[in-house]
Image 1 (tube, rainbow, N blue to C red):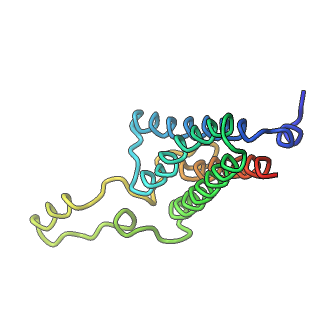
Image 2: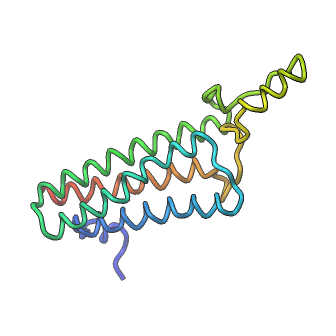
Length: 170
């Protein structure tokens, strides 16, 4: 049975694009399942999904290009996927840091609520306050929040995409 380093040495650009496609699709589908199960996403969670909404179709397109198109174009597409998921990883680390209290998050979805002076102020506050907080972890899996897992998965997909790009452009 081949070992992981051996598999990484022999991976083709097509295989890299397909694996990134599968991982990205599975990751965003998992987020939807958690949302369906009652774990409402915060503002930062929703923003982290943007990379997947762009990355899933881009990975599919790159896979098609890797099958039929110029290797250089497949390599460029894989490099673009790598950059996209590096950005997603950084955003996931940022959000996880907000959850752990390492740094402040956006004021619109973090911090304590201000006490209302009157009932009218309280009602206005209810209309404008986001219910799902960005600095509160909804669920941890093996010690990581979903933002932390986004960082891990994004790093893996970026590394795989860059490896495929290197192979395509070699």
